[in-house]
Length: 374
Image (cartoon, rainbow, N blue to C red; front, side, top):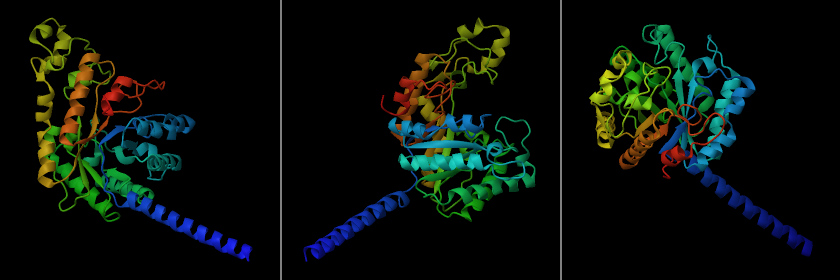
């Protein structure tokens, strides 16, 4: 009799535990799937599945689950993950399974650390934002291939909750005219919508997602699952100070922020060959209020459409003057917080712009500012 009572009691306890477990799992699923895709503070994971020659074990070890945990511990709520066509697919459009596995790993790591993730189709074989020739704008086959890449990405990613993953159509479109981009983005948007009705899609303006061109951006109508995105690297003389891949590579003169970034007196004593590269900056003033004024086109576009706004890239190269760098970053973060605009700095790990250097050393001062803990 005692044995029977004990068995019955154990069954009741087990049933109770199963019910509690079911309630817990149901609540967890509800919290993951019913939320909107919202982002506030994040960082870009560059030079992993984009703009990198790393492959094999070197690529696997460059960005790992421990990095995602570190990002979460810093106080961020999402990552923006750039991916390149040449890393993800061969020239015939066949997947590189190893790269797709890494991408899906990143999504799963984010889920485990309660982070969201934006998958950003960064560079196409037919379109690089700094290339002279961009066949994407003139070749219908390349345009259809672009749509097919998103169809294939959807096959891999649609299993993940809408609250976890968002799709960024393309990084920094650079078309000769705004209508070319408006037309292409609408077709790409529709290709995704045929497969996923409620996935958040990130859209930016023509000409490097710049604030100046945001009023020319045509956004698909009657769709609230859109995140508008701009990039901001102003003033370029500061953010890309002596950057080796730019026309400023030979400039190591003065640069000021806030205030007049380069005075006439400072300009006059520069070598003649340098003057031609920096003359546009002479006498130009930049400060927090001026930066905010420069953001007005995207702010107004988002307000008029009732859509959230996001700055997917911003940053200053690491060899820029420290004092000016810190003030600019502080001003940027304060503006993001005051306006409610989400952001992701460029980027997480890099000797040029990173929160971490390639050797793993942390840029602690920058982390404090970007994470909002400063």
